[in-house]
Every structure is written in C-alpha cells, then in structure tokens.
Amino acid sequence: MPHENPLVLDREDKVLQIFPRPPILTSFQAGWDGIMLGYMCQPADEVPEMYSPRWHSIAIFTHGNYAIHADRKLDGRFHQDAVFGGDIVIAPANVSTQASWNAEGDFILLALEKDTFARAVDDTSEEVDIIPHFATPDPLVFQIGLALKTVLASDQNSRLYAETMANALSVHLLQHYSARKPIREYAGGLSKRKLQQVVDYINDYLDRDLGLAELAAVVQMSPHYFCHLFKQSIGLTPHQYVIRTRVERAKVLLLQGAAIADTAYKVGFANQSHLNRHFKRIVGVTPKQLLQK
Image (cartoon, rainbow, N blue to C red; front, top):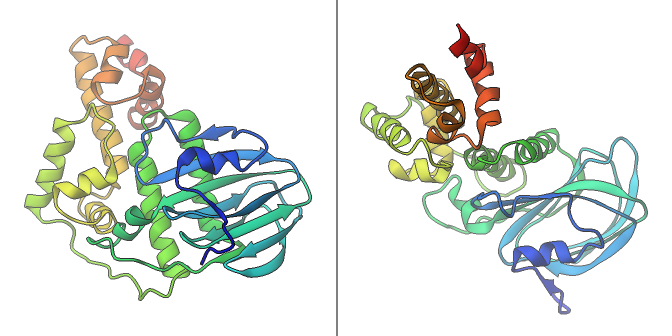
C-alpha cells in the first residue's frame, strides 16, 4: 500500500506530468471508456513514488531487443530490472511504484479503471486483487498494446475495438496475475431473443461510436460473457460484426445513389478513408470501384 506521501494519480493529466517529455500519442480524445493509453519515448530519468486509486497500470516496453536497466520500487519491494522490448510491468491500483532507468526508450502505458476492470467478467463491481509484477515478458499483453496503439493512430471511431481489447486484457490479467479462481465459460451462444435485441440495437444506432459495455448492457450481461456468447452465436466478435454491418449498409446506400463521404458518416465510419479501407477488405473493391461497375 502507498506510504510516505507518494504522488496520487487521480486525474488523466497527472499521469503524463510525471514524465519529462509529452506523449507521442494518447487516447484522451478518443472516447474510450474504462481504458486509457499513452505512447511515449522518454530519456534516462526517474519518476517519484506514486500510486493511482483509480487505475490498474500496465507499462508495455517497445524499445526493442536490448536491455534498459531500471531500479524499481513496487509495493514496498526493491528490484533491479533488465527491461527488454516485450516486457511488461504491472502496478495495480492503490499500489505504490517508483522507478529510475539508464537509457532512452519507448513504451505504451495502459491504464484500466478499477470498476470497469472488475465488471469485465462480473456483473458487480466486486474488488479483484491484481498481483504487482516487475519486468516480465508477456507476448499477449504486448500484442494487445501494439494493437490498441495502431487502431488509435488510424481510426477515430475506435471505441468498440478498444473496449474489446480491454476486455481481453482484463480476462488475461485475471487468469494470470491474480489469485482469482478460473473464469467460468458458458457455451451455446446467446438466446435467439437476446441476439435479436443486440442486432436490432446495432442496426438502430449504427451511426454511433458503439461500445462493448453498451452492447452488453442491452442484454444485461458482463462484457466478457457477452463477447464470448455473441461470437458463439454469430461467428464474429461484436466489433467484427459491427464493421461488417456498416459495410453492408454502405453498399446499399451507395447503390441507391448516396455520396461516398455522406455514406461513411451515415453508417458510423469516422471518414471516407475509414470506409474505403474496410469496404475494400470485405467487399473486394473500393466504393468508387463498385459504382464504376
């Protein structure tokens, strides 16, 4: 637990003020719910002892296959880390951390809100204890971090994808970095009634930046179980299904004479380029090529 008056990180802007350089990329304006991302490159430096009452923090190191040496204090324990690209460090909420390091390096900082994290697999906000970890390799968390960074840089309407990845990250942390019992899994998919409720909701609000927790709430389920059962029913994740539905509706509107740019916004894409990329991937041609046939 925190002690000796560490810095309290209770606002998003405070998280970034502890570093000498501003971030290269952040999710602050992306509309993500329950998860925050900052990508940065920092020189050799040190940060004061700190903790967050709101977020579980995961640092994902992306500097490559060479060691950066760090002196780290985590939950009152001291450790000398040789940190390589692909390593992660986990500092749970209300656990103090402090670090200094000897070379420049880039990393992704992910922060999961406590309540959102707990509700990823439970329908209550029951407290779930995550175990602090010094630098350790974790290929899955590394890939989740890279995927979130990529989608943040390329897609304005990335909320559903981000929340899907946050759900996968939460489940992984619960299974591998907590004392929690294994997560129950359900088979058989959603009932026909619940599936239709979700499909109708997606169709009614396709132009919105839909979120995973928002869709799960339609059928009163946790995001984890909803995502799991939806894929069993449809064969696609909610994010994949929403993208495909947007493309199919865009195709109908385009063949009815709608302009490409207008169509992109009407079906929930951030812009025409966003529509073009997914349309070409799913249909095989761009919207312009479709209309030229």
